[in-house]
Image 1 (cartoon, helix red, strand yellow):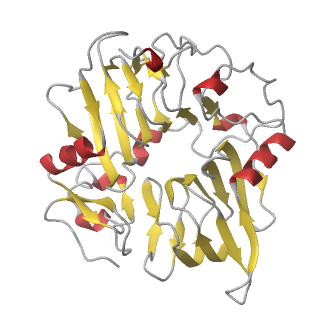
Image 2: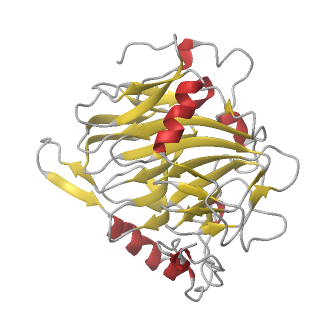
Length: 362
């Protein structure tokens, strides 16, 4: 085994997780009615992750995504009234907006909260639809966190070794779903998964309409494959993880948010981490084991920014590698229809639902 894999990596400083329920909402001056909880920001890539809150009746217009964005609605409802991304997004809806997409209008029909990964800045246009009124960048997220004493998750293995700063001690504003069963966001009631009307749009998919894929060799783990990029290798999933994931390396970064249950995590407390905790695994992070704690289903969102390598312990041969190619095959073999993005030159394949239930793009 290459010693560069750092098999004995044991972070003792900043960990890669943050409980979003302990953070405040921070209003955005360039977007009245919109607030955020900052989680991660990168200077190198300009990517940032936040939880977004839109107050009921908030209408944003003239949004230009300079990088792609993915999201999952945690509570409430938002609407894209017109354009190629027209659709209504309720709780459990996962969405993907390609880079360079322009949103003419975004309306919050209820108080709404969603987790969002921005792969680049967002431009807010003036009423003339041409002039830029403001930009939201990773530097803005870093500044907002720093001003309030919030520690963002580390971006690299080296940062994980740094001394942990004092914990945020300001007012906590829990998510609307705090204390509820987040599993219901992504798990269908009887009959919903078979209803093609539950599919919202190829870019906005009701995750309840996507069936679980279960490998008979790993019956305790179920996957909902939502997006596979043939250009970047990024894969987006919902994971139901009731067994133990064996030793593995994150050859590329990954992030996930716990929706239900509790997860046992490296250097974490014995009771594990529960709903609303968001994690970022920097490239090269290693887990000897990750498992459910307790009896409730452990369900979480996951973005994998490259392959995961499995083995049987430090220094042992590679047992398996899971990349976008394997996840694409997993979906295809289970009859999950991955359809092409409706935007030209965007190499994303997006979940629609069981084969035979695909509808026309809006």
